[in-house]
Image (tube, rainbow, N blue to C red):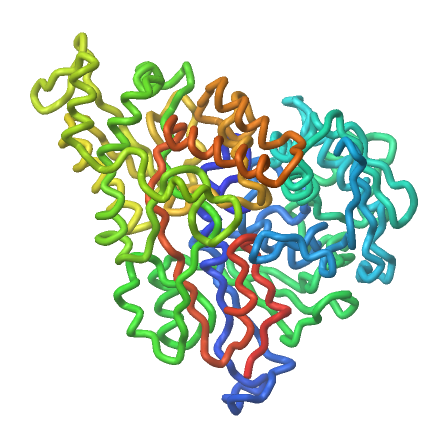
Length: 579
């Protein structure tokens, strides 16, 4: 997850989700004593430094996230300590050999999922990761998903993966078996990825302080969520433990000696705060960082880096502009955006090929719906390779005129109302700013007047009555942990993540079909395709070109590129080594 992942916070987390992986950094390959190590020798005691997303800090360490704190940075940090229930591969399959459950069975109606725990995995205190731990973690998720404004915190994943309404019960049958019973039959591919995939178990014996008072338990967790020095965080099942941290400076991890999976060959993993992309780029040039990133705006400066490999890659997500459909939108701008022809005219004013060529330096893909064409997955509908509404501002202008709009002083006007709105966008990205300026200039050709409102990320999320349209960054959404890209969390009426108020009964029906049991793989794909085609035509968002992320790794650091997982968005430093 990325990028805000729930509720009104979804936008902001989405903005940083791409950077969570793109900003991973490692220290220069130096021997523990300070001198350079001969190339080819393994550094069993090396230190790796990871550059965090710009002006971003971990602030929630318990792996059941509050809505405002469901960020990619927190997901990444927590996954190092608390292993996700399922290991999602770079091909969007489940590797059960590396998961906490070694297989899952379902009943004929796809209403009961039985999870068989992998006996290989243990907590760092030697206790096995058990079915009771899974059930306890679910109970926290469920309680924090209740529609109650007085909760100590609300779970950020509520509304995705059927949480909590489709889940009838989660029972630890015995120490190694979990039974999940649902209220109705579901598409098992969807539920395993988007439902069960949300669970990052914690040790019940450590965290269950109030077994008969769930409200008090949530209060207890909320109180410790940003207190990583608490002893509770020392019992983990992931590859690393948090050793120390200095707020807004650095976070130091050491290997979990009792980790049951691939053990780390590095002695320390240090995450460091970054003030700007420029300062991180300088650290790369000086050799202070051996794994980092190049922002899109510095792509042409990559030759300044020597001894590094630059790897373009597409994290599984999308870039978009959100329009305010809420009834309390400023100046009733929602009444304009509710008209499909207005959204179509706006889409015809987006010159995607030019944006990819000029702003993304050719390192981008055109977007025509909610599922990207890269990285390659079985979900993308190849019929959408060609834009539904190609760039044609003259056609967009004519479409508006057919609906009664006329140009007056350079702005389309109808019944005294001007076709004008503002875009609030998060500052900090040079390319993002240029993209907004490009769109405003292009839409002016159709007589659509756009005012740009640069806004610091610290001021997001904005109240619904304070914005017309929002742009949260070049990666506005990443599919994590919703690895089955149905869009329910985004587009269903009233869903937790649909804070911009989009609502359409056909969209609801098509999304619900992707959740439902299917009789053949062809039927499953047909439903996914139907949803994508409708979204492409309906424009619940304005889909924008998706730019590549540029990962930079020192030639002395091995395993980074081979372990890079653009689907999960998680880094796995325990598969890295310094040579």
